[in-house]
Image (cartoon, rainbow, N blue to C red; front, side, top):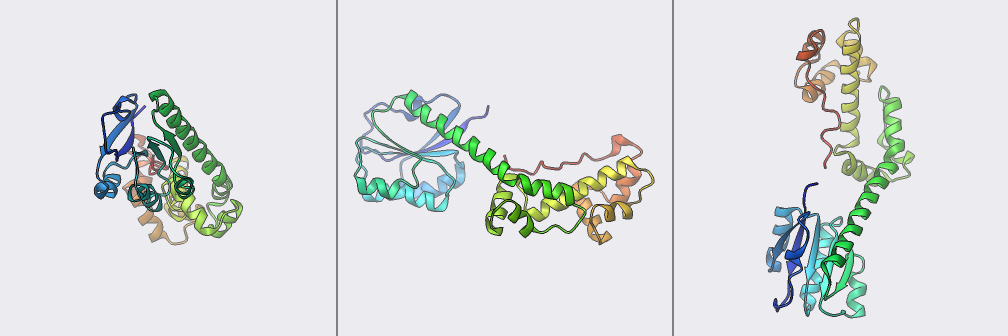
Length: 251
């Protein structure tokens, strides 16, 4: 399993206490930051899996930093470590942007429990997202040769157009429109492999393309060759490009 990067924002004024940051298991890679002025550049550079803000006696400016991060990166989990409990007003302000607030001293085991919970929540979120989009995926698979509407797919998932588009792109790594085009090209390539009698034009129309030139452009963009070249090469399987359907999805 690859390591998960934690951006550790160390805002302590005294660093004589045990250093939890360097004591985590190797599965967690930590990148330490001491200056808020470099915060957003560090997030951009490291693209962390999670962030930890560590304080001893946080002031208002330091406590505002997690709120600013959450405003810019809503999906980035944040853990807060403080030397003592902070006030109720601060907790109310932070409760919507902090995954968990831990009061030191905190053992490595306790901190790892928090990270395990974060992993489980992320897994559940991914599963929920996939389950939520299942009706749209079935809609595309059953009707890819017809005119497909994003509004219909969104309605099937009980989401607004905006919510559906955002969730679909996050889950699949493609826009809904690009996903439909990619599926059609995949099906056309399969048809040409399976039937010697099927022409390029027939394959294009069967999968829902009405414009042959558009089909050819999309086919070449996906497979790197024209449909005609692919059709000629289908009698020699070793020369066929491998279709990469779904490989554009973000990991």
